[in-house]
Length: 198
Image (cartoon, rainbow, N blue to C red; front, top):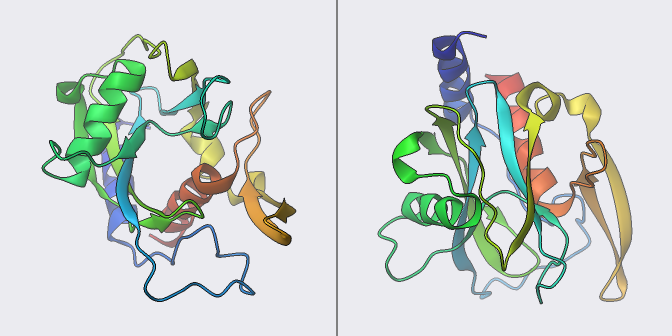
């Protein structure tokens, strides 16, 4: 797809109404306390010139979410003026994607996680080819998934497991050897829904 067509399609998706997004979407039996405190975070949905999305496999040595698949991103630090700044900083640290190499298109509605984060997905186009450099202590691998694959709702399934004594259902979008699930899969499914509705 020509670059301008892709940009237009993604911008139209950002402008679409969209649907609520959280780790609890599929778990209506969970009652969330109204006074809960959510920490701000952001992830970057970075689309390459050949229309692939950048994903990471977290290091198996990490204390939190070891070995899981994630979009580049993390919590907003005091030095981050905006959530977009947080996503771009984390992407530069985690995969070596320079901030000036990304054309930011906008942000999607925030996603609430079971780990008490309010994660805002930032959608951007990478201006040119780049060679990923995984952050040694945090990222085991950087890989790409075709945008067309994650935009196809047929590639998503719902699975579940017992978590903290209750069944928890969640989206998955497996790709080759990669088990993409939880918040990452839900955020990508949100993008797929918005593109379909645009």
